[in-house]
Length: 384
Image (tube, rainbow, N blue to C red; front, top):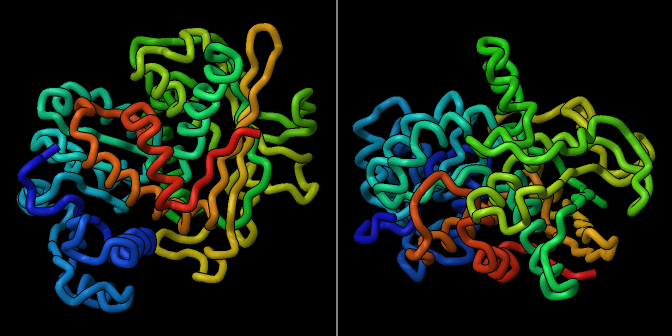
């Protein structure tokens, strides 16, 4: 972290659809210049001024002009903040220089990346630099993958309290979900497919649940590719985000020194038979009307009407179980994601004891993250 910085947070990409929601959350909850000192950043001063006024942020909200293609502007921006929040994706197209600048400067970095091939590239390129500089680099600070990563952590904490120890098997089951995934998610998926076509070696990272744990390969994991009958919850179907979330859950376990065990098994599925009116999202084609374009998204009413409910079943070696749920009060792709990203950043800058590196939100912040999300981001973590 950059302790003497002018701002706690700079929201980079504040003129885009999701960045604007992050800025709006900060303006409404914290004002400007109060307990959280933050600024809006983007390529165009005029657009930043327009968005500032549209979201009702105070006129004195600081604005920073920086272009992803201008290393000098990025370097100047990262030196002004303890943490940079970026919503400028697909990150594999626009993110390299910003991660590099933050890792070098010791500035914290948070994004919404659901791009495992790029995340692995950032781990390989910048983990050691960030460790040395003290920068905490956090990918996947939205619906992928915080509710899942923090949900598994909470499930294991519950198992320790109720069963006397962690469990070697956790099932993530999406029980219900209303509201869309983001246009950025769809664009990231397309960029990832294009990258794999160009460099087929990336497919191995995409296909492995341990693609983000360099040097560690755990036991075989359930594929989750076909509908099946789950003895613990009934019919289940594939969940399109599992390919990202499972990797982040295993990286969390890896970064914390395998508290869940080196033999930990985790998978994610959607509850209900496919097409039976369940939450869906088995693939991008299952999104009604197709995915939105980057920068587009649902109306305020649609965001407010959205929610999600994820069940985690922890199973001990002797068959005993714990069940916990993570619920969000807005649509997953935007309303909830924007609040999670903002609040994770605040939790991070208030945790100076966390060491640098390319981390995951749950491994870095553990209970502090759960507490902050419950207090300020509309999430609930409950034992069932």
